[in-house]
Amino acid sequence: MGQPPHRRGSPVADGGSWPGSPTVITIDTRFSGHHGIARYAREVTGRLSGLEWSGLSSGRNPSSPAGLLDGFRLGRSTRLFYSPGFNPLASAVPQLLTLHDLIHLRPGLPNRSRRLAYYEALIRPVIRRLGRVLTVSETSAEEIRRWVRDDTVEVINAGNGCSSEFTPGAAASRPRRPYFLYVGALRPHKNVPTMLTALAGLPEARLIVVSPDHTRFSTALARHGLSQRAEVLSGLDDRRLASLYRGAATTVLPSTAEGFGLPAVESLSCGTPVVYWQGCKSVREICAGYGTAVESATDVGQWRVALRDALEQPQPVSGFDTGRFCWNRVADRVGGVLRGL
Image 1 (cartoon, one colour):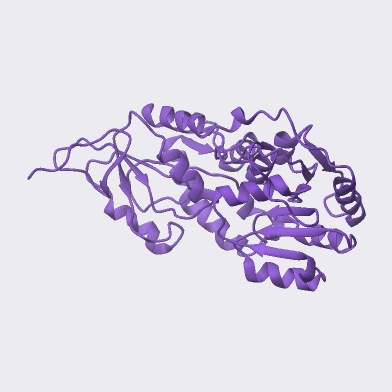
Image 2 (tube, rainbow, N blue to C red):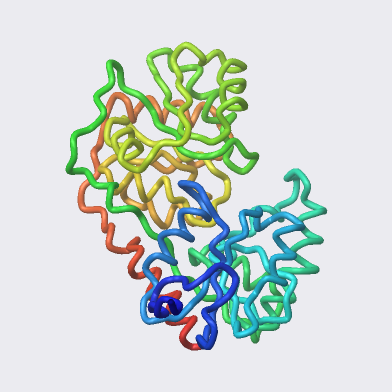
């Protein structure tokens, strides 16, 4: 029995193509998970239409040394490799990468020197060779243009999307007491200690954290005396997360830097305002007019006042333009770039 026909807009095989099939694009399908790059990869690749492509799926971490060597598994007919992430392959095939941000390279972050070497030796040459790179916000695009130091490279903001689960229409999660919601990791640029210190001075405040860093977050909550009025959740699906957004008094996003700021979009799409630092440009672009901008990133007093006001004077969001963050639009932009290469 012969091989099944090559379908458009879907992978034909892992790391190869059917015999005789003119596979010209291989897409990195090694990402897994609910949020971050894995979410972006799943949403975008699942919507690419009118393209013939094969998937590269090995079970390896794309950021690992073994993941780099997956380049040797590319099919001989591949003329372009597209990754929804930033990890290149050891391959002579031209590669279109997606640099979501350059936060890894900021001074003071762990393992910065190792990451600088990785970006300088591997990522920048791959980008310069193709002359194009994708990203997810204009904030990230501006940073990448400065970093790549090559005016011939086109940095394309393909945007980012938000799941259709995040709407204000469904029933909210109704708490016994009002709560704040934080969604994200526990990394230096997330500025979590400022938020926790501010909340520690609000005895009436409750906090729900949605994060993959369950153990470390629990330790941080205990350190700030918040264990009895905070909860850490992990691995939620979109429906459960959307319910938590709807039930929150506000979503807290104290980051000093973000490539995009997906929790802000999700929260506002659910009708819940956001308290954020006004100096975080990408978040400010999303939230302007739909939340509270705190002037200082680290002034605990300012954050405490903003959070108390959010509890005492709730301001549900209406009129937020969710159409700006549509996955179909993102996939159309990515597909357009791929077709043009």
